[in-house]
Length: 232
Image 1 (cartoon, rainbow, N blue to C red):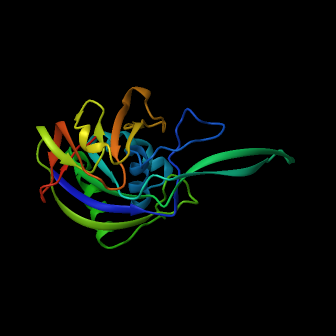
Image 2 (image 1 turned 90 degrees about the horizontal axis):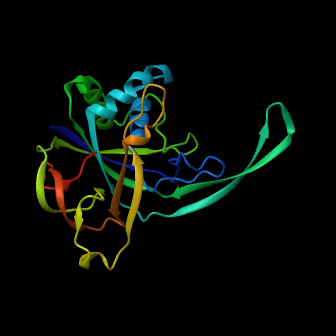
C-alpha cells in the first residue's frame, strides 16, 4: 500500500474529548479525525467541501502515530462573554498538550482517495499549505515536516517491535515496560458527513511514551524501511 511519513509538532495542542464539554480535556495525541481535518486545511478544502471527505478519508486512509515528546498537559482558564450580554461572563478551563510532537504514517487503503493522497504528499514535500494546519484549535498552529514516502505491506500477524500506538487487543510484553510509561486512550476513527464522530467507531489503544519501543503480538504492517506499525 502506498504510504508516507511526516512529523507534526507545535507549542500547544487540544484534541477535544467529546464527553468533556464544560471543561474540555484533550486526547493524548492527534486522532485520525483531527488528522483528516488537517489534511483538508493543507489542501484548502472549505467546511462544506470536507463534509463528504471526512467519511471518505476515514475509510480510505489508515494511520499510525508515534509519540515523540513526553505527553505533558496543562490547564488554562478563559473568561467567555456571551454575545447577547457582554457583561455576563462564564469562566472556562481547557486542557492543552504542551510541546506535542508526533511521527505519523498514512497509508492509502482505497484508490478512491488517490488524488487527495497525492496532493497531500506533494504539499508536504514542498512545505505548502492552503490554510494554516492546526493541532485541534486555530490558536494551536502546527508545523509539518515531510520525512519519507514508501509502501506498507499487507496486514501481517505475529510478534513485532514498535514505537507507535497499538490496540488494547494486542498482547504486550509487560516486563520490558517497567521503566517507562504506557498510556491508554480511546480515540475516534470515523467522522460522518454531519461532522459527528460515531461512538461505535472509537478504538481503545495503548502507546509507549517518550519515543520508547515495545514488543507486542498481533496485527501489524511493515513499512519500506522495516519499521512495524499498527494502523487504524
